[in-house]
Length: 119
Length: 107
Image 1 (tube, rainbow over the protein chains, first blue to last red):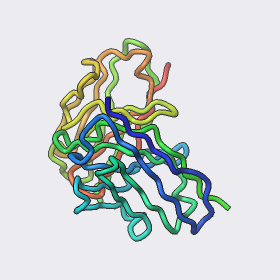
Image 2 (cartoon, one colour):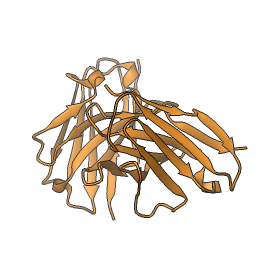
Image 3 (cartoon, each protein chain N blue to C red):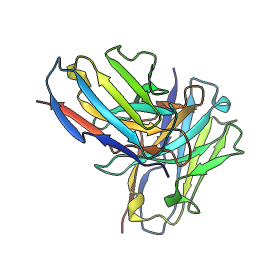
């Protein structure tokens, strides 16, 4: 059974940093692109970042470029999102998702982890 | 960036109704579009990929159509478990962009 479990969310002050993790199981992690998608409270979904199987390609939404870094450790079946210079508008539930390029869609999602940026 | 719009933003329907949601892209995206269902407090769930292909395990009352800029999600006979918010997502180029969502609630 495919499982994605996020962790690392919490309350952080504006300008602070946080590192999210996503533990993957039930599939060959190193064979898939992976992604982060976020959802601000009461708002819609926003794609944040993608990373290729070997980490050689990474893509970001403009609003996080230069502040967030997506990475992965295939030996640990884990995906990460390092978030620096956090702003109030980064407050959201962050979902880890598996990107299935065969069907060009996010076919599995984690349960999400809440990040709150507030003083 | 490609802008995705959805209509309506919300609708009220009854069990058994046929429901149609439209998604429009600001430029052509071939058929690189998916539809996702999200219930309150839950992660999104993939329903349709490549505009018209039904994801494994999704009931056949869900269908998708369209290509280029205009796409449709249809629920042929609305069931109680279908009350949710529906999002389209273009996967044609970066940044990937979601539509703003369509909330389907009970009439």
